[in-house]
Picture 1: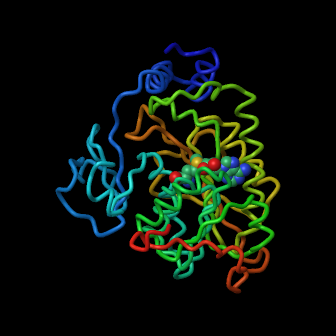
Picture 2 (picture 1 turned 90 degrees about the vertical axis):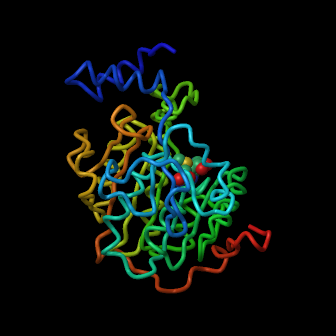
Picture 3 (picture 1 turned 180 degrees about the vertical axis):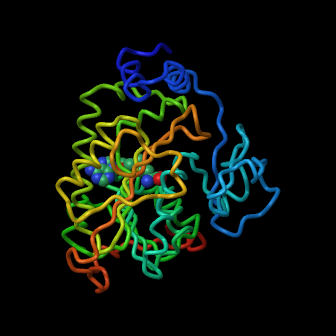
Length: 328
Ligand SMILES: C[S@@+](CC[C@H](N)C(=O)[O-])C[C@H]1O[C@@H](n2cnc3c(N)ncnc32)[C@H](O)[C@@H]1O
């Protein structure tokens, strides 16, 4: 596959100082090589089950529950996968999702977590393992993606989990100020899919990027309404476009002055030069993962009212049951 003009322009804008980085970035997208994938253990990690990258070669901040398996290891065929003991994630998903660790100390015990864009469930499961929420509501608007989401949460025995299929604005209307942490792993132009060898025509086209940026801003505005005072909003994507990512986060911050971007110290090396606030970028030519973006935002303690009430019943209509019941 040849780099299009739009891809070349994007590479020049992302790496203005070196042609070498532009070339390496484009090669990672155009000639995808087999990559190490991450696995997330939902039970205490067992040694020797998978062919993994030695711990000393991994970043020191990596949660104990995460390992990196060698390229080519078929995680989906392992008994541990069928038993819901491991969930496969792209390493860049772990990097972006790990920003929630910077919120952990400031969260109440057993926080209430909302995953607004949840299917197929990777970030929900990551949040469940890292934060041990008192309740986690995994929302997915696309009906055809709800089944796989419920199946994954059930198989991985995510506790105190519920699913919904509502527009973000509806959740905001039902439960203003109700959540301590909200994940917006937003629908995006998905430019990093190319590094997985997945065709994504038009992903660098300005109209694709513009449409996604608008949608992300709408979702973030609704997500903001659901946040308790002092709560955290984690906005992540799997794309490189600065009009999404930093552009969307910047616009959101302009219109929502009660939110402040939060430093994520363990990701300092990935700090984006494209924002004057802490935001983090991972690239497919520098990471075991295919690349992504994360920004962690915090709502001011005094903004709005925290709802300590139980969530309104309709939001809890679809609990996730364990796999033994046969019902997800
Ligand atoms: C990047 S994927 C989420 C991946 C998921 N968080 C994970 O880690 O497995 C984005 C999701 O947002 C959903 N989505 C699409 N439009 C949406 C909207 N308007 N509001 C909320 N979610 C939307 C998509 O169906 C998709 O499942």
